[in-house]
Length: 558
Image (cartoon, rainbow, N blue to C red; front, side):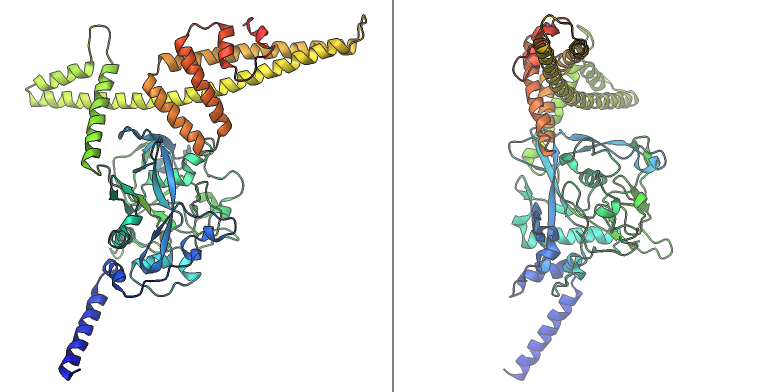
């Protein structure tokens, strides 16, 4: 090699080195694949530590990261009608506390996942199983030094909201450039990484659809134990102001770790006050959820929200809280294809027309929304036209709220009906047992003698039989009322949707006994719709799910 060639080569190497050093983290991470050597995968202890245990279960999804790292995600199912792109799931979030009601009072929320399970009524999204770790953050910043256990398993703290958003963007960019096929797709297009919305975070934190509905609204997702069992907080034997490695405490029902404590997790949207169940109009600072290792246990619960200024008031720099961390979700844009957009437009138009037809006021008076639309089209005064359009908007909002309430009512009625079926059958079985005991006592009593012991037992059993008969009559009355409401006040399509979603809820929460009774009640609904004039005996026969009992003879007295 000549001296001239050597100098040129050295100069070129220096230029390339300067360019590499000047490149941002995303650029350095994306050029990783150009390296002749492929990074070795990181140990499971750093990517999905829960799966390392002998009885551990691996994460639902493991996405690759720069430097051979990876990030574990759990799937969060949101039961919803997949055939209708406008359908979503109404849930109640927050807490019924007056002390912190301005921030976390009870409120309705509506969720739908960007991804869909084929041939089911389930949509879903993905949320990171663990908080972002120091090692993962280092990899995203382009530092591919050998992984360090346990230092790289520590939750990444000290982030600003802007840095968290940038890390999410860097990760998406790297995946698109290096592992596009590993990202969940919607309509043939890959999703993307971002911070979670508050509703997504809280729904997943509470356990989503897999948790028992009686536990979902509670202050904490666990029934037994303490907050310190589930996260590092400021308490003896817990965090006490020090950030810990992820995944050391117990998981929530979805298999998510460190939902409580350790680092407080940054949310996507700004803070808003809660005005008795609705969001206040003023947008505020950044929001964190879950509490941190600096919070006392009583300050850490599922609904807790904390607000901070996004900038340091003294320096003007982005605020990087000592315990600010993050947990990512995988999402997708809503109108992900022309066909999807067309389906949304068609569903919206159909829903608007259906709502109008459903609210006809009296014979011959027509559809009020259609009449209102005609008035808007004919109006030439801009001020009056604007007022009419505002009225149309209010009317549609009322109708949408009515439809949502009807859907919730249908689900509640179906669940109540299933409970009545179970109670009617249980009571019938108890009546059989009582009658059998009475006959046994009559058989064993000495013939021709009056035995006060036997007579007292028979009298007591007869009293229990009479009480059971009265209860059965009450149950049958409530059962008929539920069947009548479902078949006369709720349309068949809404009824079917409610049944499908409720069924999916019960499957996900593993309430299989209730599910079996619900399926039996669903058949009862179909029978009652054909014969709504069933007498007491016929109604009882419809409700029975086991062999006919002697107790049936007593029902005719209702």
